[in-house]
Length: 272
Image (tube, rainbow, N blue to C red):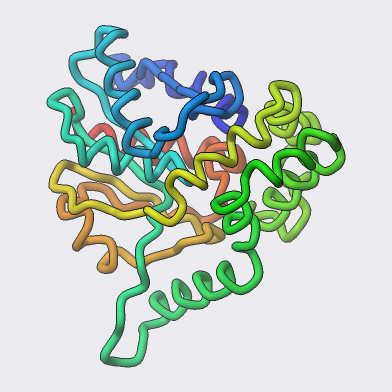
């Protein structure tokens, strides 16, 4: 949730258009089950689909008759699951990540396709160990994370260093306080184990449904998954906005809040 604290204010504030103030949003930033400010599930079954159903119920209880949804990382999977449940109130979605299976090509890849292939191979070969560990033995890992603040800090800090668009130095795009705040939302509520359980529930069951509702996507140059538009079109069949950011990585709202806000405004203006 710390990742979004810099974009809430700008999204809530109206932007003037021709002397008329418009495009102010109510912003709801729910915490995933087992993460941050959320409770820790005491039973299995909290998959991305169940979480998406909970988000729908949340919005209905808050009284919203129409809303849009945005997601990256696990939020992207929850958002597409939410869209797959097709609540009548959902006007559209925006994603900044969409992990799809690499298609088999019967021709040499284009430059954009080769970049996506290289990024996917690099992730699998050098960066995916954490996911396999959390997806298969989250409880075992959790004992170590709960025991060592240094271990918990580096478990998160290393991902920020590797996945942000920062040349390996996350303090070049984020303040030390921001980094520590993010880490502390795992350490203080002892959420190392409970957050890892989402991987056990859904990591090997990931799927992207075919969606016909309006969708937007912003491609960030240092995102883990960088599929070109035509790879996503079979899944997102009604793309109304496609943005290409000049900078930014996996933690888009955290690293580049101004770009993130502009992209959401441009996308959701098409879904009124």
